[in-house]
Image (tube, rainbow, N blue to C red; front, side):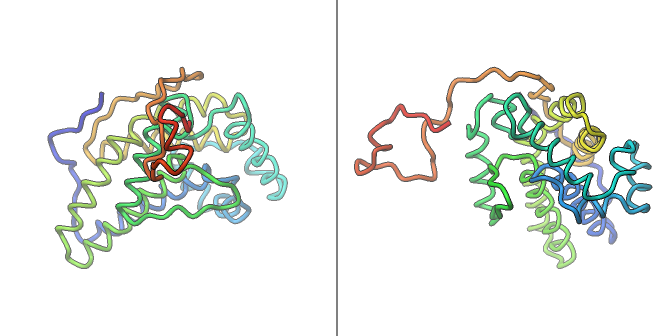
Length: 259
């Protein structure tokens, strides 16, 4: 069960607020970059400049020498292996809402976020590897886009549209991110061997707590950091984006699961 605070978030919306929104969007994108795919060379190089490391240290991140003191090419290879071990290999912990809450891929949350993206005009751009819409990096990137739009609406003076976007962001946290990212972050921090993912997990957890407080929402941590997620009953028997008719095999098999 999840619930939203009745009281609005205490956000000071002065002339600097659009810049604050863009700064928050930047944090979403920083976190997303660690999950959407294997961290690229440019992403890692940007994180290792002294100014970035100092800023992250102020947030409490303490990277070990395995991140700060090795050649960039060696770091990229090490994190590619860690990424595969954590997120794609059997026995890992895939960063997908469906797997964290239902124990299966492409369940109800997957189809829900696809519908939300479609309504918002958010189109998933596939990178080197195909990812599902309820993957952590994609969900974080989506909120970053909404924050950028919110800032633009405020700057243009469209208060009605800005208010609507604020509600959409809160709703997405209540129905999706808030239900699983905090628990998942605690699991990832325990499972990670490389200090990069350990510290990114710690940042994800603290950032989620701060964002929810700032937005004024409270959501139960359904994930709970479980190492094993029991497989729930299949709740999605067909792809709601796919037409069902007598002319196709799937339409003739109403009990077929696409999980």
